[in-house]
Length: 417
Ligand code: EPZ
Image 1 (cartoon, rainbow, N blue to C red):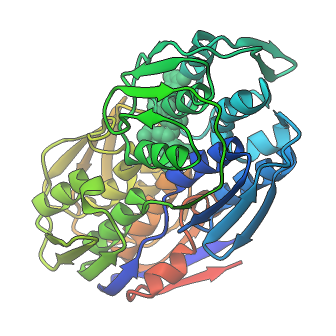
Image 2 (cartoon, protein in one colour; image 1 turned 60 degrees about the horizontal axis):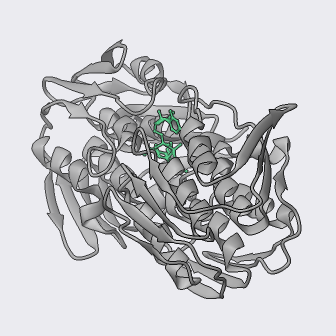
């Protein structure tokens, strides 16, 4: 079992490049089914979730080749429309393939995605959207079976701005007859990136980034080349590492406005944060201070995925910072592990009260989920002594070799496989 041994208490110093966005490349890999041609994706992160999505594309009959941070997909040869349980269990967000498979073949059979570490992960909004477009949906032996002789454009009113439901609606509507209007759509940058790719392969999608997305269904399909946007949560994580350990770090290859709520919070804590066109410089040399409540909201609000790493950066800040987690039911599983390192955190339902302590002490801790796991890395960098972090498969889902990345800016991390 892989373990990270982190010798904390060392200030970070250097320049670190951010890889492409996991939450952008996954829906775009699914969307490549609709190109019915060749897609080349650049700045593709080398992550286990990406590998899982590639396995699904190959299972469907697509030809895929991965070289470093580029992926080549030929979806002309797609012949299947089902994703088996084994592959669905590898990555629950595989539900994002539903809309694309249905739009391409008229049928999609997926094993019911289970919950995950963050709590139940219902897909009711996904299914309501597909039904509104004309799909017949049934459940049999743990599978969701979607069939549609013809999908017809309509109005889809999302109850909440679900990222996945927005993406599935865009994908399913793209080849419908007629126009679809998606209201209360998610506004994340990853939605905009998906729209950019879809329009490159011939779809007609407009409005991504706003709450209303219009999809003019058409029969399209052509080859395209696409560069994935940088990962705003990985960018945020690296900045939180610098805040926790102290030091001076420049994060490059980022879109600063995509993580403005996070950089605003770090500035309010007393870090010096300077943003350039595509880089962010942070200097953390003084004692940090607690800040106003951090309330997670759909984009452009504070991102739920940055809640755990920012919480870890607050553990030694003077005073008490209140966190309110509004997106997921169970996104404080990292708290008990942080407490093992000496953190003072009290959780009441969706609220976590973080009171700064003088110092954190190293401890053996276990990752609980992707962002909860990386919060342990952030905390260990600011703790005295050598912390051991296990269950790294959670972290490897969303961070390319986090040990090598952080060692390049002065961290002392050893990974034992
Ligand atoms: C995406 O998940 C991201 N994953 C998540 O990132 C991110 O935390 C989340 O959006 C919110 O920003 C990917 O893009 C692969 P949602 P998604 O649908 O689409 C509820 C990470 O760490 N809901 O916006 O699943 C749902 O249970 C991951 O990289 C329904 O009730 O998120 C959740 O409480 C974690 N019914 C809330 O809405 C539905 O049909 C937000 O979910 C759909 C969602």
